[in-house]
Image 1 (cartoon, rainbow over the protein chains, first blue to last red):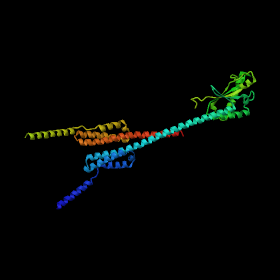
Image 2 (cartoon, chains in turn purple, red):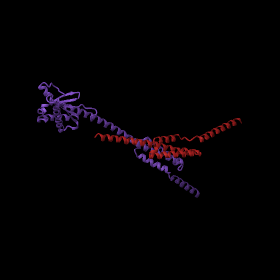
Image 3 (cartoon, each protein chain N blue to C red):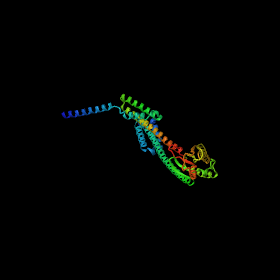
Length: 267
Length: 121
């Protein structure tokens, strides 16, 4: 009887000892790897992969119950740990892909907005140019030519006879011209002074140059960029009327402001 | 007698076939394709240059060699079990390599947006 009781106790203790068998490191690592993976974004982002990791862990646990110390249990546990790590990696990839997709979408949207704004800016600029040119046409003769838009100002309005100092009344007119030119997107200007045929060529050359310079200086004073205005003394060489009549000579005594056409290379 | 003899022959034949099958299974080559191709894929993805990926690539290679060694010693089941480790590490090495590329692409995309906003305030 005593032996039988002893055997029962021994068997019971042996069973308990079996239940208390320490899990191999591989299984401990596999359990904590799965716990970490299941608490992270894998559940949301890659549930199928997380499920595979769980199944692998279950296999390892089952093997542990049957053969606690076997190589099979350890190998299955090792694989289960890797499956959990795989799920975490795939979740991180899915998150990165979402970030990339959003950034790409933001980029497209931003680009579209920029293009839209640029188009609008161009439309607004063209409107301003049209308005400015219409204003210009009210105060001076404006003509479209091959060389650009030509604004013609009468010499007698701008200067006293044979002088190159601007009349006070001329400044008022030139203020209006400057205002219109500044409203237009930056263009290159050529200011040309012209005379009639009376007087010597060299005298007329000098006078026409000085008058062109005077107009230029005034426009620069009014804010037009100096590096965008050139001057030319054209002397009597480009008449627009017959020098034989007083009216013709008056018309030839003029200053022309040529607004050059926008070139593709113009900034 | 003849009846007993016929049954005896059939039993003997079955035993021979069974033995042959077991012998055949015992001599079956180790199926290393999955781990070998996984290792190759990881190498092609540049795993050796990515810290975490290169660790698992190395582990996969070592485990594959261990499996081959076990198979050569006739320990087929242990070899097959070790191969599972090699496959798992190779798969992880491949995924970590891809993950690294994905992260770089995400960072580049975010930077592109930031640069565009900076250039067009």
